[in-house]
Image (cartoon, rainbow, N blue to C red):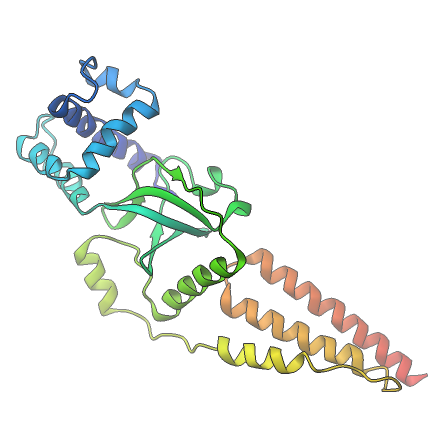
Amino acid sequence: MKLSEKDANLFFDLMFPLQFYVNQKKQILPDVASLEEYIELDLPDQAAVRDVLWEEPSLIAQYVAENPNKLPADQLALVASWQSRIMGRFILERLLKKHAIFITDEKVYAVLGLHNSFDEIIPKEALPLFIETVLLPFRDVIIYDGIIRGGNIMIGRNMAAGFKETYMAAKRKGNIIASLNPEVQARQAAKKPKPLKDWQPLLNSLADEAKSLRAESGSPPTWGPAFSLVKASLAFAETAVSTPQDDDALWKSFERIVRSVNKVEDGIFRAMD
């Protein structure tokens, strides 16, 4: 869920000189006279420079044209690619093993951390979460610029369900954006997998119908456990379809099936008496 140590170091080796260049041009922090001084600044001071940089991406073009730090061509191209930054408010919807899921304007992005994975910064219990940050291309993947500001908007159950569906729809259609590199995006579009069938509507319908399954007074002892097993199985199927990578949710749902099976076994023994 993060860059390699080498790539994370490279990111900051490129970002700090770029921000120092912006500070020199704009005199945001006029007392900072060297790159070393800039690197030692507190994050709020660096954030003030960072904000100006992303508001005026033309400064990146100026930096690339002047190349004051004599960067090699490949590193200069990496800095130049940051003109394609995506800034604004996002929903941090979930944390997966390979990346975090960011949502904005119905678009879903797979984002890597820098030196730290997102689960080292933000607890899963806090998700989904409104945040403000800047997404950047880094070769063939997407990263953020190292600064996240939290939002003050509470997310209710209905909103959370909507964000979940946005993610699931993008996943089913193969529309999760994992790179801001146009060439990579073109290759991904060309080999886009066939979308999986959307079983969610059918499972929802079956679950609604299953709610009416109830053992009447005097019914065989297997009925109640059997009906509970049906409901538990449908709940597991819904979890498997909607969140197939959520190991905790899958195990929790599976344990419900195991409990239901045990009750069915008890019901069979009672029926044999």
